Amino acid sequence: MPGILYHLSFAEEVYRNLPSNLQIDKVKFMSGNLLPDLAIDKQKSHYRKEASVKGFYIPEMEIVKKELYIPKNPIKFGMYCHLYLDYHFIEDFLIPEFIWDSTNMKVINPRNHLEWDVTTFFSQNGMYGSYTEINQLLIRDGHISMQTVEEIPEILPKTGMEVFDTRREKTWKKELEEYIAEKKPYTGNVFDYDRIWSSIEKIAQQFVEESF
Image 1 (cartoon, one colour):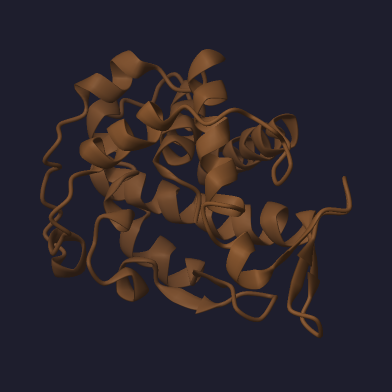
Image 2: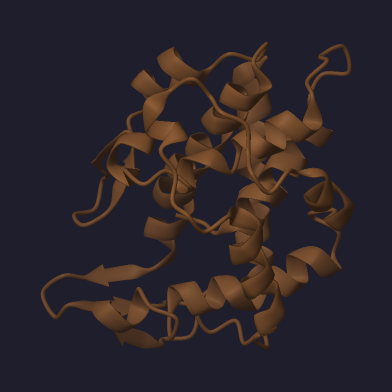
């Protein structure tokens, strides 16, 4: 569910904290972190099952680990990393961060008492717009190196898995360029930058501890 820069920032944070004796090709690893969102069939590429709150879906990590947890294959390991963030971002950050009032179909931010109807929350006027706000801060604070981004090929390598190799036409790079060009001012109305980055750091540390 997080956007491109969040996945790349997470992957960068994971890579920085990998054991020093582990030799993983960084460009391939970062490429793998992009692939699940490029697949046409998101249901299959994200191994979806219902989350703890109705309406949310998370990867079925037991199957994900079995199929993609291959540190010797940096592309598949990157794909595993992407889905790991999706799972923990939704269950450990997004769901606890808000009040989900299903009776009135409202989403409430307990930090500032702002509320949205469900349709507005899951739009550019809500959550997705907040992702765009924070993109500039991730770059500003060096959580993702733009040099690293430039090294990743626009057309990503094949995986040998049909669901991941059947991809949408629009490349990740064109999508990212559009997000960065938007330069939406940060308001913090939906997501607080420090809270969201702290959560990503924590999930990255947990990933490394669990993986090695």
